[in-house]
Amino acid sequence: DVNAGRIRGLTVEREGNEPVVPSLHIVADEAVYDSARSGWSLRDGYLRLFAGRDVERTFAFEELRPTTFTETPEQLLAQPKEPEEMTYG
Figure 1 (spheres, rainbow, N blue to C red):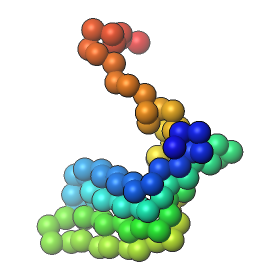
Figure 2 (cartoon, rainbow, N blue to C red):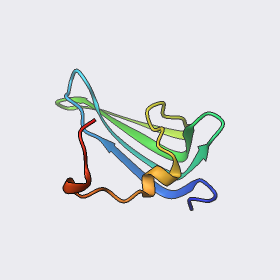
Figure 3 (cartoon, helix red, strand yellow):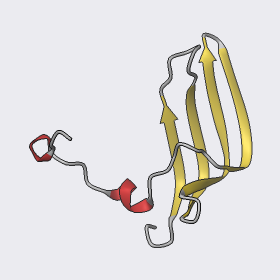
């Protein structure tokens, strides 16, 4: 719901370069956007961390505030541009 700044049933994956940069898999029941701090609060979920061969950790959380997930609700719903619509900056 863009107007309420809420996402229900969120899954986030980030491919890393183990073991230097771990891969992440996050599942949350809900995410709420806080415009005052320009970030999201993920609620009631778990985070799986893959830090190399046979190294996996799972953490349950009530609330998680990822610092790099800063897109606004409107940005998440934006339609991707076609290659011919893109320009070099």
